[in-house]
Length: 398
Image 1 (cartoon, rainbow, N blue to C red):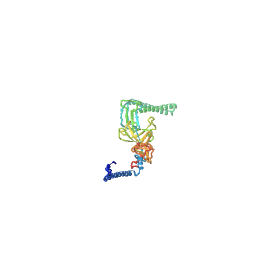
Image 2 (image 1 turned 180 degrees about the vertical axis):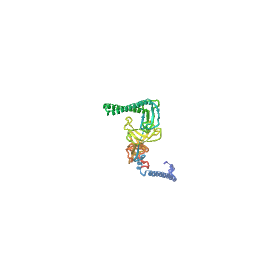
Image 3 (image 1 turned 90 degrees about the vertical axis):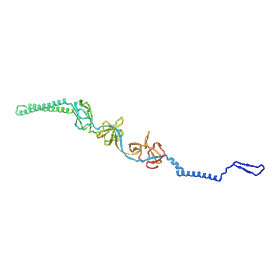
Image 4 (image 1 turned 120 degrees about the horizontal axis):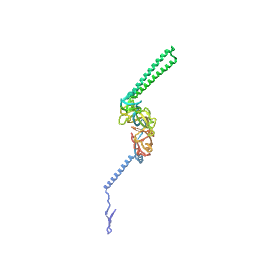
């Protein structure tokens, strides 16, 4: 405060000339108290709001901080899964019959079928010239007639000798000699007949016939071609028209297969699916690629062409396992794993072994029983021991 006074020189009374202080009025004091009241009310409202949010204690806020992020978890249990093995392979005739020359051979004079033709057992496929062989057959037939005549003559001589021996005109030794002559003539007939049959059988081979009914896959000869037993297969026939897929299967999957299991085949270039059945499982494994062959029998269809490529989905029984979405399963250098939330809401790493891949997810064959609270997604952002707020996939926060 700054007071300024004036004192008279003659010793008169003291008097205040000026007071340099702003003294608030009654109205000013009222405004000041109003502002202070508003501030107090604002502070009280903020405190009340904090109380309602936290429940009145700082411990709840600390607990909420410790719970961490909200994480969706699932407990899928276990399910029965139809096992499937996917493989690829080459189409082929289930029983392919190579047909060639079975004999001396010669020049092809006629071909009766073409590739893609259906034939029956014994049906002629081609004919080889047999003009020389026919002459040989005629000669052999004539030899049979000559031998037969000699045999009849020898028999007649023996019959006459037997009549004379009773009268004593011919000795017993003459009869024995005539008997031997007759036997030799009869044997000669048999030799000539055998030679004729041999020539006829050889000639019959000059007509190439189908060994069984089926579909002609290849025709490798034309009229005028000279063929022999070393010419290779002139025709290839799929017996009964039956086909197969020679599916290449890993060593592990091959052990799961057995004869009779069903398979679905889709040839390359076709969207049609064919039903087949495994009829043979390879007893050996290729040491280079550790694979074996599962032979899948297929009925005839125009889309199934030998030499073509196809994929197969083979049934391999059923397994009981936990099925998880792909997002739940993580992997690193130590293998596959999932995050399981324990009773303290802490994330725990759980190693697992995966199996079949289905439309519903991936089967876990080892490491889980399905009752655990398993992190459904975003597990890659967790660390072992981290506290989270678990939320069931079909419920609210836990």
